[in-house]
Image (tube, rainbow, N blue to C red; front, side, top):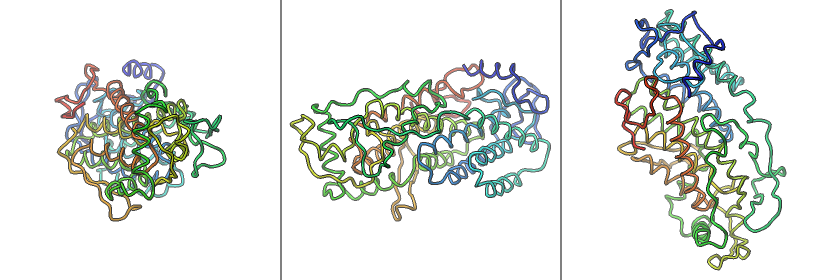
Length: 451
């Protein structure tokens, strides 16, 4: 699929640098002898990938979570495209960016991240320029460096162009059609306009075919046992004054309420990559796949949210007498954390956890890690993990014990997210030789994850 896009890009006049279509060196000053074959990048550090991932997260800052994952995906795909134009190790994402022999993949990564972020956040230009100058100063001046910068600049231009008019603007809102039992209603956090991010289902995905490709299965019906189980759990542990919520679950709820998914999951990715010290190509690929999957998950989840339009615990529990379920009892209810202004099912945090964990487990394995997560907005709380799946469990608990979701919202979302992560791994940025699907055990790449 992508090899065809690459050839088409060349035929239509892709971005050529130095008049050459050859692969790049794996180190500054090293040249290839086979101009049509991928060149190993095994000895080029991934340090600039981690550095500019952190700069990207910081530059995006406290933006809403769904635009933020889109910004991260654009940036990391530009970085991947630039690095891969040099190393030619994987099939490209766009296939229109090429590089002269010997171009530095490190310089390409720096320039791609810088120019992409500068285009997305022009107000941050001065700081980004300073960071770029510092990063580039660590590389020796050479033709390889100059060529690498040009490759990165071309990749940034191509990715920004690819996402222009992708449906992320203008914003649109949703007004509930009626107040029938089960139908989502506005909650105190809503603006007068109604449900937020109604338009996000129309954003062009980065990898999946459409927002509805992995639509959630139907939620439990109101009279069902499954609905009652979710209702009763949230009622018991999610209220702000609940005596059934342990302190550690309160901490988890507050951390994941205060920390946007792009911040937490990219922190996990940097820590995992830091444990291994992989090469630049591999880490650029992993970070691109994780962030494009996160963004695709958020596009997908809004299609399902507004398709099913299911009420939140904050609405459902006080109206328990209306749900035609003898296993539920109405009560006053105020959630521990603020309820977002859009339907409950399925959960956005859950789909993000499913997508990101699927990619990270695939490449890094589930266990034997030393990971920490914290946010300055919840001082004194540091979450520690040895398994990636334990993060997923905490994200699920955070939304239930936080009082804003039913458990089945998270369970379904996680399943959706895993499907999205698997799809993108199997269909995008595959190894260049043979174009075979990579399930995490490629000896050349050192992948030792589990699916």
